[in-house]
Amino acid sequence: MNEKSLETITGKKIILRPITLDDTDLIVKWRNNPSVVQNFIFREKFTKNMHEKWMHDKVETGQVIQYIVEEKDSKRPIGSVYYRDVNKAYDSAEFGIFIGEDDARGKGYGKEIAALFVKYGFEKLGLHRIQLRLVKGNAAAAKTYLSVGFHKEGEFRDMVKLDGEYKTVIFMSILESDI
Image 1 (tube, rainbow, N blue to C red):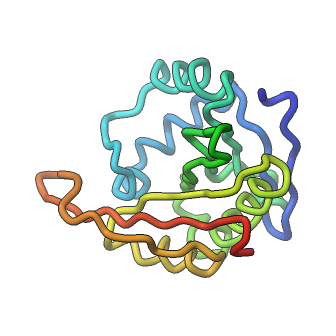
Image 2: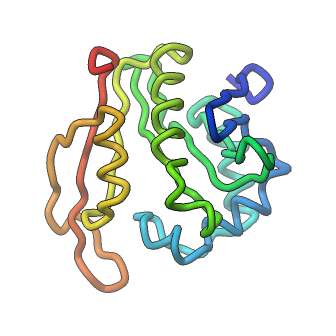
Protein backbone atom coordinates (compact mmCIF):
# COMPACT_ATOMS: atom_id res chain seq x y z
CA MET A 1 0.00 0.00 0.00
CA ASN A 2 1.49 3.35 -0.96
CA GLU A 3 0.37 6.94 -0.54
CA LYS A 4 -1.40 6.88 -3.90
CA SER A 5 -3.80 4.17 -2.67
CA LEU A 6 -4.49 5.80 0.70
CA GLU A 7 -7.43 8.13 1.09
CA THR A 8 -7.70 11.50 2.78
CA ILE A 9 -9.64 11.40 6.06
CA THR A 10 -11.69 14.45 6.99
CA GLY A 11 -12.88 15.24 10.50
CA LYS A 12 -14.58 18.22 12.14
CA LYS A 13 -11.41 20.16 12.94
CA ILE A 14 -8.68 18.25 11.15
CA ILE A 15 -7.78 16.54 7.89
CA LEU A 16 -5.48 13.53 7.64
CA ARG A 17 -3.64 13.15 4.35
CA PRO A 18 -1.07 10.55 3.33
CA ILE A 19 2.52 11.60 3.98
CA THR A 20 4.86 12.27 1.04
CA LEU A 21 8.60 12.88 0.76
CA ASP A 22 7.73 16.58 0.41
CA ASP A 23 6.84 16.51 4.14
CA THR A 24 10.40 15.59 5.14
CA ASP A 25 11.45 19.04 6.41
CA LEU A 26 8.31 19.32 8.55
CA ILE A 27 8.78 15.85 10.06
CA VAL A 28 12.43 16.57 10.86
CA LYS A 29 11.49 19.89 12.48
CA TRP A 30 8.71 18.34 14.54
CA ARG A 31 10.68 15.24 15.61
CA ASN A 32 13.44 17.53 16.94
CA ASN A 33 10.98 19.77 18.82
CA PRO A 34 11.79 19.24 22.56
CA SER A 35 8.07 19.06 23.44
CA VAL A 36 7.70 16.17 20.95
CA VAL A 37 10.97 14.42 21.80
CA GLN A 38 10.08 14.21 25.50
CA ASN A 39 7.19 11.87 24.69
CA PHE A 40 9.15 9.54 22.40
CA ILE A 41 11.24 6.58 23.46
CA PHE A 42 13.48 7.17 20.44
CA ARG A 43 15.26 10.41 21.29
CA GLU A 44 18.21 10.66 18.94
CA LYS A 45 18.52 13.79 16.80
CA PHE A 46 16.24 13.20 13.84
CA THR A 47 17.73 13.86 10.40
CA LYS A 48 16.52 14.23 6.83
CA ASN A 49 18.38 11.02 5.89
CA MET A 50 16.66 9.11 8.73
CA HIS A 51 13.25 10.24 7.54
CA GLU A 52 13.96 9.47 3.90
CA LYS A 53 15.15 5.98 4.88
CA TRP A 54 11.95 5.54 6.96
CA MET A 55 9.87 6.60 3.95
CA HIS A 56 11.63 4.22 1.55
CA ASP A 57 12.07 1.23 3.88
CA LYS A 58 8.87 1.43 5.90
CA VAL A 59 6.19 3.64 4.32
CA GLU A 60 6.74 2.62 0.71
CA THR A 61 6.75 -1.08 1.69
CA GLY A 62 3.50 -0.84 3.67
CA GLN A 63 5.12 -1.63 7.02
CA VAL A 64 4.13 1.88 8.08
CA ILE A 65 1.00 3.80 7.14
CA GLN A 66 1.61 7.45 7.94
CA TYR A 67 -0.47 10.57 7.59
CA ILE A 68 0.09 14.28 8.03
CA VAL A 69 -2.43 16.10 10.22
CA GLU A 70 -3.68 19.46 8.96
CA GLU A 71 -6.00 21.97 10.57
CA LYS A 72 -9.16 21.82 8.51
CA ASP A 73 -9.80 25.56 8.25
CA SER A 74 -6.25 26.76 7.55
CA LYS A 75 -4.84 23.57 5.92
CA ARG A 76 -1.75 24.15 8.10
CA PRO A 77 0.19 20.93 8.80
CA ILE A 78 0.48 20.42 12.57
CA GLY A 79 1.60 16.84 13.15
CA SER A 80 1.51 13.23 12.14
CA VAL A 81 -0.28 9.97 12.94
CA TYR A 82 0.79 6.52 11.84
CA TYR A 83 0.60 2.78 12.15
CA ARG A 84 3.96 1.08 12.38
CA ASP A 85 4.85 -2.60 12.36
CA VAL A 86 1.75 -3.34 10.30
CA ASN A 87 1.36 -7.12 10.52
CA LYS A 88 -1.01 -8.49 7.89
CA ALA A 89 -0.83 -12.04 9.33
CA TYR A 90 -2.17 -10.84 12.69
CA ASP A 91 -4.17 -7.84 11.40
CA SER A 92 -2.39 -5.68 13.93
CA ALA A 93 -0.31 -2.51 14.08
CA GLU A 94 1.19 -0.07 16.56
CA PHE A 95 -0.38 3.40 16.77
CA GLY A 96 1.72 6.55 17.01
CA ILE A 97 0.88 10.25 16.99
CA PHE A 98 2.50 13.60 17.61
CA ILE A 99 1.44 17.22 17.36
CA GLY A 100 4.55 19.03 16.15
CA GLU A 101 3.28 22.60 16.36
CA ASP A 102 3.24 23.77 19.98
CA ASP A 103 0.32 26.16 19.47
CA ALA A 104 -1.86 23.32 18.11
CA ARG A 105 -1.90 21.43 21.41
CA GLY A 106 -4.79 21.63 23.86
CA LYS A 107 -7.40 22.15 21.14
CA GLY A 108 -8.88 18.63 21.13
CA TYR A 109 -7.07 17.64 17.97
CA GLY A 110 -5.43 14.59 19.54
CA LYS A 111 -8.72 12.97 20.48
CA GLU A 112 -10.22 13.61 17.05
CA ILE A 113 -7.11 12.33 15.27
CA ALA A 114 -6.97 9.17 17.39
CA ALA A 115 -10.69 8.43 16.96
CA LEU A 116 -10.56 8.96 13.18
CA PHE A 117 -7.39 6.95 12.68
CA VAL A 118 -8.54 4.05 14.86
CA LYS A 119 -11.81 3.89 12.92
CA TYR A 120 -9.83 4.02 9.66
CA GLY A 121 -7.57 1.23 10.89
CA PHE A 122 -10.47 -1.08 11.65
CA GLU A 123 -12.83 -0.19 8.80
CA LYS A 124 -10.47 0.48 5.89
CA LEU A 125 -7.21 -1.30 6.73
CA GLY A 126 -8.85 -4.41 8.19
CA LEU A 127 -6.99 -4.28 11.48
CA HIS A 128 -8.23 -6.37 14.40
CA ARG A 129 -5.87 -5.03 17.08
CA ILE A 130 -4.13 -1.69 17.51
CA GLN A 131 -1.60 -1.26 20.27
CA LEU A 132 0.56 1.55 21.56
CA ARG A 133 3.30 2.28 24.03
CA LEU A 134 3.61 5.41 26.08
CA VAL A 135 6.05 6.67 28.66
CA LYS A 136 4.37 6.77 32.07
CA GLY A 137 3.76 10.37 33.09
CA ASN A 138 2.26 11.50 29.79
CA ALA A 139 -1.16 11.93 31.40
CA ALA A 140 -2.70 13.94 28.55
CA ALA A 141 -1.94 11.18 26.02
CA ALA A 142 -3.16 8.43 28.36
CA LYS A 143 -6.44 10.30 28.91
CA THR A 144 -6.90 10.74 25.15
CA TYR A 145 -6.25 7.07 24.43
CA LEU A 146 -8.66 5.91 27.14
CA SER A 147 -11.31 8.31 25.84
CA VAL A 148 -11.28 6.73 22.37
CA GLY A 149 -11.45 3.17 23.69
CA PHE A 150 -7.90 1.97 24.32
CA HIS A 151 -7.44 -0.31 27.34
CA LYS A 152 -4.38 -0.33 29.55
CA GLU A 153 -2.77 -3.76 29.31
CA GLY A 154 0.11 -3.27 31.66
CA GLU A 155 3.18 -1.40 32.78
CA PHE A 156 6.74 -2.44 32.14
CA ARG A 157 8.63 -0.93 35.05
CA ASP A 158 11.92 0.85 34.30
CA MET A 159 11.82 -0.52 30.74
CA VAL A 160 13.76 2.31 29.14
CA LYS A 161 16.44 4.76 30.21
CA LEU A 162 15.69 8.26 28.96
CA ASP A 163 17.75 11.31 29.81
CA GLY A 164 19.61 9.29 32.43
CA GLU A 165 16.45 8.10 34.21
CA TYR A 166 14.65 4.79 34.08
CA LYS A 167 11.09 5.15 32.85
CA THR A 168 8.10 2.87 32.97
CA VAL A 169 6.36 2.14 29.67
CA ILE A 170 2.59 1.64 29.56
CA PHE A 171 1.13 -0.70 26.96
CA MET A 172 -2.42 -0.12 25.71
CA SER A 173 -4.57 -1.68 23.00
CA ILE A 174 -7.94 -1.48 21.33
CA LEU A 175 -9.68 -4.30 19.45
CA GLU A 176 -12.19 -3.86 16.66
CA SER A 177 -14.79 -5.39 19.03
CA ASP A 178 -14.14 -2.54 21.51
CA ILE A 179 -15.80 0.09 19.33
